[in-house]
Length: 254
Ligand code: SF4
Image (cartoon, rainbow, N blue to C red; front, side, top):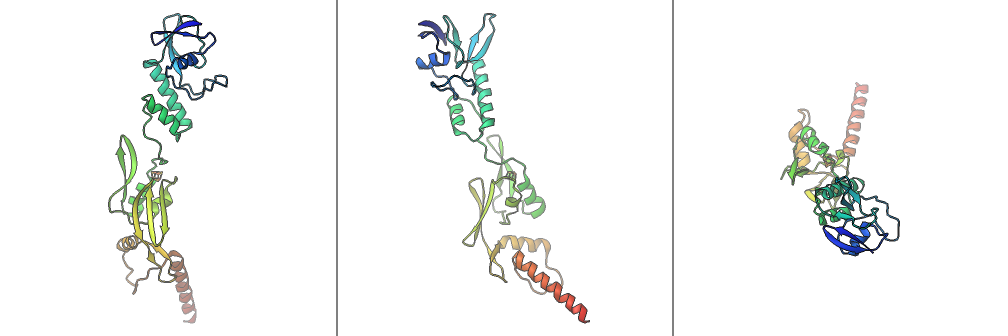
């Protein structure tokens, strides 16, 4: 047995052990995700850094899973150097496994703030911009929560057109048409539920009354239009093709 010093306390440990093994054998907490007692240490996760002062007197961090104990070795498992090395390691792990709750949970346990978990949104703001610039409803905005920007609905503005869903390059905004109701959600929150209007020609449910009213208000009725119809895009195309062909035939007969 030999004596090492961990955080200023002497411990009698077995020769040949690593500092991580010696610490754990004495109930001293050092984080490590890549360590397994049945396998050779690899130093992959880099979470188990401890502070060691070299013969030059300069303090540095070394991975405790690969550092072997030796008589009189003194290490610190806490302090600024260790904290910095740990934060760096946690952040690097998170870039490789951003959805891992195991990494987030462990970071939380050691007081390392990794920021809010990723929500899948890449903050391109296409949804916010298209809703404002093209649709003209301005139903979405970016909202800061705990220092991070999130896409958020503006109460009562959504007209249920689904343009944001179509333009979103991720699946953060979703739309579902079921039982004659259109539901639009951001992340896991429903931002709008809208009844669907029936196509006069085929009976299919195809658009929300708010959307149809919005388009009507924006475009206005053409002066030559005598009556207004609500057709789904397929029937609208069919009707317009029929009108075109009828006009062609009429021209030929003249
Ligand atoms: S919700 Fe989609 S479209 Fe909107 S900012 Fe996020 S990724 Fe971009």
